[in-house]
Amino acid sequence: MIKERAGLDIIAPYKAAKNHEAVKRESGIENIVKLAGNENRLGCSENVIKIIEKHKEQFSFYPDMNCTILKNKLSTIHGMKEDNLVFGNGSFELISLIALAYLESTDESIISYPSFGWYKNVTLQMNAEPVIVPLKEFTVDTTAILNSITKHTKIIWICNPNNPTGTILKERELKEFIQKVPDNILIVLDEAYIDFVESDYFDTVSLIKENKNIILLRTFSKLYGLASFRIGYGIADEDILEKINKVRLPINVNLLAQKAAEASLEDDKFKNLVLKNNRDSLNLYYTELDKEGIKYVRSNGNFILIYLGIAGAVSEKEFLQNGIMIRNASEFGLDGWIRISIGTFEENEKVIQVLKKIIHTNR
Ligand SMILES: Cc1ncc(COP(=O)(O)O)c(C=O)c1O
Image 1 (cartoon, rainbow, N blue to C red):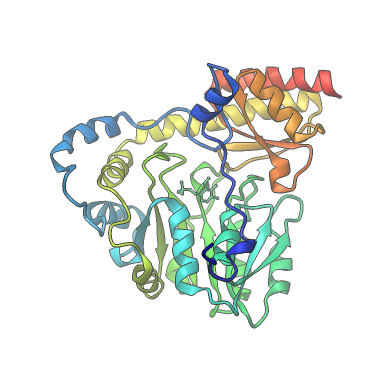
Image 2: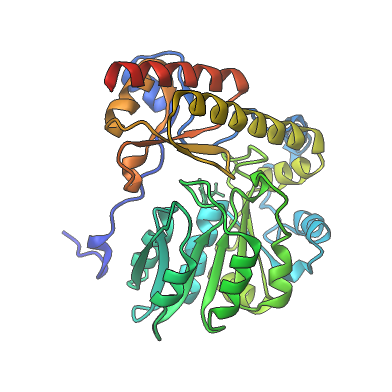
């Protein structure tokens, strides 16, 4: 037996939502709608399909390691310099790169709970110490985070909107928090779901212009429906990106991912369709759940957290028997809760029907 690196033994492998094709094979259920991974059920822009065909002559070449065209487009969209952008194989990779560039074994990183699980994994991978701060009323507790800062704190991970709760920090609270964090601590604002924020939210890119210790993370996996391509990006001061680029794999974003992302940015019609479906669907959930007196958390994401008061494993199994994959939120420490990704309007209607049935038979 070859001994692994010190510290690896305490890391549990990341538990992502199961792949629906695998679930189909295992369960023998043919028609399964996956609403467990916060993916886009409307697919992606038609532009993407066209652009793939158009680039087939280039499949045998290495792609542009700097994502130059995409970088140029996004720098215009965000009003930032190209040097303020870095791309990753999904924001998963960017989270890993941040840890690799900044965390040492004597460092602590502050993580809300429940929140996105990868922050803890990457902290442990670097032999650093995760400091877990519980949410308050399903929302990131900025006061408790500030109270948890020590001289060892190196990174604070903020998922905004937070997965799996869908809550967001108000502009004033976020800005006051940032001001109070010492500037030798890196604040990671993971904004995977920022496009879905319900009310008028401020443009968080402005934070980068005023603060040199923040990195914003965005992804093409959610609003743009490009999860299978694996592409996300970070926006930060040049100094931070210089460090991240030192540990980045030379060609980490493949050609199709770059082209698909470029093409998606051109399609406002698809984007608006997704946002409208998300808004209408959440409103449908709110109305129906209120009617039934079922507790839920209002969401700023493409998912909703609902309290059924039934063991998550039971709900998960019963939803699956009805052809729907949902996420058992006890995996995130929320017993009796489930997280359901927004589907098409018809899929959501079916979810609500099944949900009522499950409640009536199990309560
Ligand atoms: C909060 C959050 N951050 C990052 C990611 C990773 O996204 P990507 O597909 O860009 O790697 C996810 C995926 O679900 C997420 O929920």
